[in-house]
Amino acid sequence: MHWTEVPIHFVDFEGSPSSGVVEYGVVTLRAGEVAAVHTRLCAPSGPIRPEDFAIHMIPAEATAGTAPFSDEWEIFAGLRSRGPFAAHFAGTENAIIRSVWPYARVSPDFARPGQTSVEWGPWIDTGRLLRQLFRGVDSARLEDLVDSFGLRTEVLALAEQYCPADRRFFHAALFDALAGGALLCSFLRQSHFVGATIPWLLQQSVLDPDRREALRQGELF
Picture: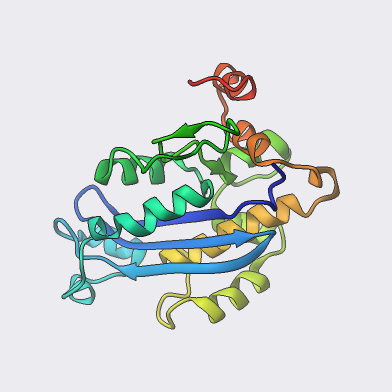
């Protein structure tokens, strides 16, 4: 299953344990191009602390009248049924989505073709792919990687096309999802990854060698 054959959904959440998800962004990639995006602000489940606002710049009043993230089951379950999720250091996104919905809808297991799963993962993880496939990169921060791979102009152009006018910066959910998607596609455009498959990307996104081998052998963790 070549990576261009199924959609990849790059996900980013903004929020904290205090507030819950206050913004989500999802970019669906098809063959390295943006095919669709989903984003909105969400009603917090608790207070937005000053230290959280300093990162994502979402004031409580901006979320007034919005629905909670938990209302978006159909969007996220539907996306998962059509392709794997991706994120930059996906452990955070996986923990957040599981805290709202512990299981997904019965969906294809893209790590083990022909089988099904009710898990949200495994995820394609650009943070872990970086550690597995590249050497000499000083910082794993998304913003630094966008610059290291020469992607800032591309990301800013995508943000102008897809992001709300007041959310075109790092730590805005859709902006970060676009940046992560651009980073993933920049990896896959390199000649030595021309034959990359979805199962291989999922395997390389796992750092633990035993878990990676279990995926390679088509076994459950």
